[in-house]
Length: 124
Image (tube, rainbow, N blue to C red; front, side):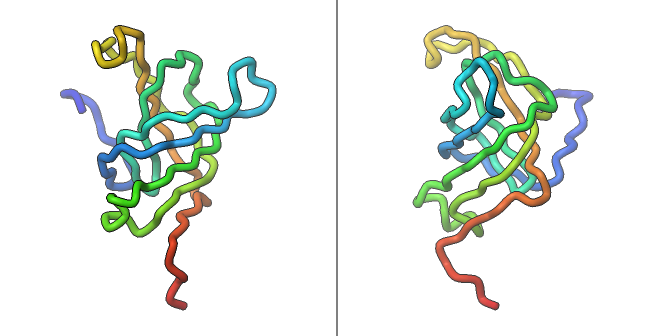
């Protein structure tokens, strides 16, 4: 976070590499299903990078994130799924790892009804 910026996150984020599947509204000219690698996650939101320049602030999406098995001991869930909205899109510097292509950072905020799935039955 840069100097002068305010952290408005509702939840503590954890850095990890995990697949995130994004479904975008029907009727878009772009593909409606995209897979990316999430960079950090919390129950309140997630951040991922993409080569697609067409994400817009306040765009509604459906996200599904699978926590890798090696990381599951650090999370109370194995998959997080639900509606969200794009809260930030930031142009990133091209990197050699990305083949010099432009990249964009996308921050999502999950809706309050996001579902955290576990592999263990709840202890009711």
